[in-house]
Amino acid sequence: MANGKFVSYLRVSTDKQGRSGLGLEAQREAVRVYLDGGKWKLIAEFVEVESGKDDNRPKLKEALHRAKVTGATLIIAKLDRLSRNVAFIANLRESGAKFVCCDLPDANDLTIHLFAAIAEHERKLISQRTIAAMQAAKRSPKWRREHPNGFGNPNGAKALRGIGNDAAVAKLKADADTFAADTLTTIADIRANGATTLREIADELNAREILTARGGQWHACTVRNVLNRTKADMAG
Image (tube, rainbow, N blue to C red):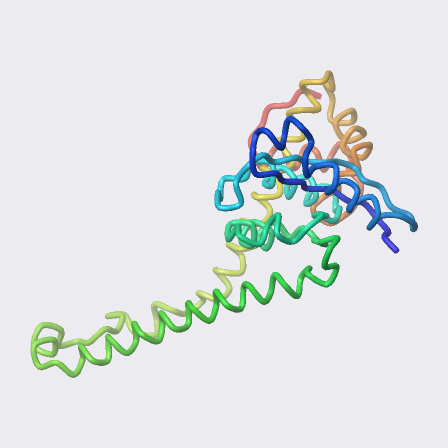
């Protein structure tokens, strides 16, 4: 039984299918059947007319963005609407959006982690091959003559001290900047529709069920913080 907020993503392969609705109505019906019962709300629908082989999916990016800023679950009618798109996996993981597929409900985080694990395994193989190549090179007399100090950092361990904390701080800052940039798009739309004060923007963000970075409600001060981080101008 479905509960919570959902954003649906539908895709057809041709303009003809998009104009005629062929395939779209079946996908909408699958979403409707999946959501039947429970306490749920479909807050947005995004339709893509694009080949499954094409990684350029602007509507997918919009759907992921809406799911991310509203705390909703991205819902797809059929797994094959996405399975051939490698970019989808990266976008979904980076967005932090929850995901469910109507024809295979278990194909959510577990499936995404499986794809990610395969990619990680490939990266490990590449790393292992690189290390093996470096070790082979180090055994070469010519390489030894040209690199008497080896591969190491000339500053030794000193150059690595504190890198863990620096990386953690940089990650937190990057996450905050990304959230602010995501939210600024919505704030710009709200301002374009007549909001002129921080309070009015906060009220509209709450009305659209968009959450703050900590998952709470918006206030004038939290809007100001986002605008300050992005250096966007705002009066009052």
